[in-house]
Structures are given as structure tokens and as C-alpha cells.
Amino acid sequence: MSVFGRIKRSAPGVLLLALILAGALFALPLFVPESAIRAALEQSLNAATGAHPRIEGRAHFSLLPRPAIGLESIRFDGAEAPDFSAGSLRATIRLLPLVFGRVEIDSLIFERPKLLIEIGDDGARLIGLPLQAGGSPVESRPDIKIVDGSAEVRSAGGRSETLSALEWSLVWHDSGIAARGSFQLRGVPAHASLLIADLVGLARGERSSFRFKLDSEPLRFGFEGGLAFRKGLQAEGALTVESNSLRAALAWSGIEPPTKGGFGPFLLKSQAMLTPAGLVLSALAIELDGNRAEGSLTLAQADRPLVQGTLASDSVDFSRYASGFLLKGPDGRWNKDPLDIAALTGFDLDLRLSAGRILFNKTEIERAAIAAAVRAGRFTLSVGDGQIFGGMLRASAAIGPAPAGAEIKLEASLKGFDAERGFRELADIRRLEGAGTLALTLSGNGASVNAIARDLQGRADLAIDNGAFIGVNVEQVLRRLERRPLDGMADLRGGRTHFDRFTAKLQVNEGSVSVQNAEMQNALVRVTLTGLASIPGRDLDLHGTASLVRQTADGNAGGPTFELPFLLHGSWDEPMLAPDLSALTRRSHLSPWLKGVDPTARVAARSAP
Image 1 (cartoon, rainbow, N blue to C red):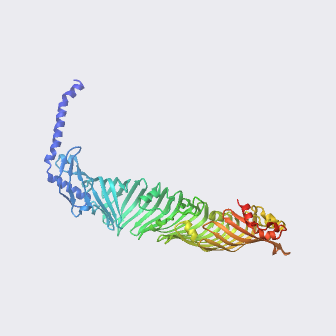
Image 2 (cartoon, rainbow, N blue to C red):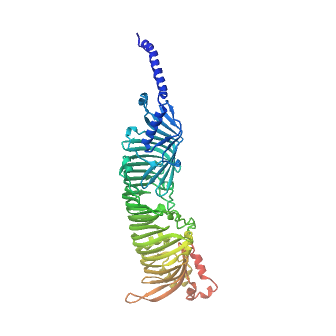
């Protein structure tokens, strides 16, 4: 007989056997009493949660796609109504024990549940019940699945977060539990996994191995170490935090960055120790916006978050954080945009940084020790010793809230610095060269940089040695005018005046700088200046006297041989120098011809750019 023939003859028997088995399976629910079903469910729920359930609705038995029991109403003894509710519960049943009349639950599937998770001093509680295995053997604990659920997570500090679109599975391993799933937090999808090696020991206050990973678009977080509940949550282990945009991650967490720029790519790796008092990060390596530093940090929570720490770095670039604090606007004048320092009220800071090189826009500080602090919304920055513009800097700056908007204070001592670099980068003044020493004290209030500039108070003492004033050769001009006074009509710009020493004492009042006792001299020339300079207007209104000095036989400077009063006025960037032609014409035989002429205005016009 052919193979086809044998199959044809045996087919009716196989079909009959299949029908008998199918009929037996469909008949199984008729032979399993509802009391046995309820008892199996209660035992499984007790094993999974450690609490005694109360089944209030009718249990529905179904065979396909696999044996399962459906419930529409279930409660736990001791659990309050807001702590737990579910649209339905579906319990899958192991098939082989069912054939022998036993009901063994394989998994519990909660559909559309609403959970409450509390993290307190004595542990974590799920649906108001201890998250523990209850001492049941592993084989009797069913896996738990949550479908389309939501959870409210409450911390001991009273903070609450809501997780939605919760898809979660929990699997028991000996005395531990593993969980994996997805959810949405503040509208952002996230995936997470959790492993607790000894859940029973954790409930008794013992330490358990613990691993947690979170992966979302704004933030990736990982921790592996130990966990315990001893007078609060405690943990220690390896911590990794990574983000493509720390600004987005902070916004997701409800934290506003203190500046409008920067806070981009971020990576943190550290050994972490969490206690009820706060979080300590040691052996810390942190990268932000391409900057890398190492050290330690402590984060504590009191009235508001407190960050303390010490960091060291080879090179740090703070230029990205300058936006929002721009000194000059698009028109080149002082910025009139409102200052926003509200973010400083959200946290406290005590941070110390040592760096081989610090860059802020075009300003570079080398081998600097910096201390930054935020207290009650007031930010203070101190530089102990730093090399800047070739000199040594000690300074402190502060910005904080004030009735008018913001208050700033600045104290600085700068010795041996390159005057050309320093004044160019700090005040956009490009007229002085030499080795300078500066002592500065300023304070002001206002709602913008422009308003603060109009309110500035303080003083400054400046001395520059072996330098030059760029834009005019005073000695050349004086000698030319001494021979031909009417050449004062000519353009005086061009060249430079070298000097042995330049000193100035400045007094600042409401943005106006009073120049007191300013003097520039070398062996042949002496120049003195007095008058006013406006910080808000960035202009000058100075008058002075330039003198040729007689040399004595011993090489010392004697009395003046020729003196020229002059005016220095105009903008800081392009000041105009105008001699007092009244004095010049008195030395000339042409003075009768020039009566009625305003020589100062004429020279100023010819000297204008």
C-alpha cells in the first residue's frame, strides 16, 4: 500500500482523537469548581503581593487562546480604594495541572490599573502594600503584567509624579524580582528595567543587590550597586547619567537652567552614595558641552536643592553660558534687554573649580582657582589667584535680586597685566599699551545692563608703566606747534606717544566717571587730564595740558618749555583730540586775522573721522 493510502486510512482516526481532546479541553471548566478557581486566585495574589485579596465579582473561565480566568472586581484587605483599582484582571492557568483538576496560576495580567507607589523611610510600597514575596516558594508566585496602566509615585519629601501608558512585567527569581517595561512621564516615552536580588531581605531592612536603567529621549540613567531601607532609602554603587541635551533633561525634570546658553551634551560617571541626607558623588568624571572635569559633588535637599563640590579641569570654556548676560546690544551700546535672574532662586550652590585654562568669550584666565556660590538667589563668583592678560588677578563679583531688578558688585585687583589686551577685551578700548595695575570697586542696580551702567558707583586706581597711547604722537605735535602754531589746524591723528608711567584716579557716581589726577609722562613730554567720562554713553569730555619738558644736565626733567591746552572728547572707540587754538594764535602774527573764528570747532571738524 502506498504512503498516501496509509494516510488516507488513518486520517479519520486522527481527526476523531483531535475532536475527543478538544471536547475534553472545552469540558474541563465544567469539572473545575468555582471555589477551586477562587482559592487558586487568592493564593497567587497573596504570593505576588503579600496581601490577602477579596474577590467580589464572578470569575469567568476561558480556554482560548490559552486557559485563563477573568475578573471584573477585586480588592485587597487593608488597601484603601484610591491605592488600587483595575479595569479587569486576567489570570492565565498552566495547562498540564488543569488536566488533572488542579488550578495553578501562571501569570496575572492587570488591565488599565491605577497604582500608588510610595517610597518612604521604611521602604517602597506598591498599591499600599509591602512590595515583598511573602515567603512563598518561587513556583507558586505568578508573573505580573500591567497593561495600559497608570501609577502615582510619591516620595518621602512629598513630591509626586504620575506615570501613564504603563506597560510593565514583573518576574520572580528566588527571593528577588525583575521588572521591565515602558511608560510616559510628563508626556515623554521612557523604557526602564529593574532588578532587586533579595526583596524579602530588603523588606527586613537588609541590603540587596540592585540594578536600575532608564532610557528616554532626554535622559539615560543607570545604577548598579546595593539598596537598603534603614531610616530612609540608602544606596551605593556605580552611577551613569547621559543626555544629548542637559537643557532638555532639566526641563523634563522641572528644573530651569540658570543661563539661556549651553547645557548641551552631558555625561556623568561616578561612585554614588545615597542617604536620607542627600547624594554623594565620588570619583566623579563629568562632561558638559565639551568641558571635562573630575572631583566630587554632594547634593542635599533642604528648603531647596543644594549642590556642593570640588572639581578640577585642564580646560573649561564658559562662552556658551554668556547668552542672556550680553553686555552690549546689536547697536553696540549697553544691552537694554531685561535681566532675568529668577533661575538663581531655585537652588543653592557652593562649588570650587581649579582649572589650567578658563575661557569666557575671548577672555582667557590661566591657572585659576574659582569659587562659585548661590545663596537665596544671589550668585557670587570669586577668583583667588588667576593669570589674565599676562597679569595676576584677584576678584569677586556678585549679582542678586534688588527692588530695581538686579544688583551687581565687583571688586578686582589686577597686577602686571597687558593693558592693550585688558582694555580691549573688558571695555573695547584700544588706545593704551603697557604693563598695568588696576584696583577697581563698582556697584549698581537696575533691570538691564544699560540701567545698571547708569547707576554705577565706585572708584578705580590705574597705573601703567613703559607703555604708549595710540592715536597721536604728542611730542611731535607739540614741537610742530611750537615752531608753527597755525599748524594746529591740521589733522593731529596718527602715531603713538610712549610714556614711562601713566596714572589715573577715577571716581564713579551714577555712571559718570570723574577723572582725577590723571598724568602721563616720559623724559620729554608730560600730559595731564581732568574731566568726565560717561559709562552709559561710552563717551569722553576731558580737557588737559600737554607740555614739552626741558632736560637738565643730570638727565632729570626740568620745567616746561612749551605748553598746549587741549580737549579730548567723542566716543571711547574714536576719541577726537582738539588743541586750544586760542593759545596758539596768541603766539602767531596771524592772530588779528582769526578774530571771530571758533578754532576749536574747526579743528574738531577737521579731526572727525
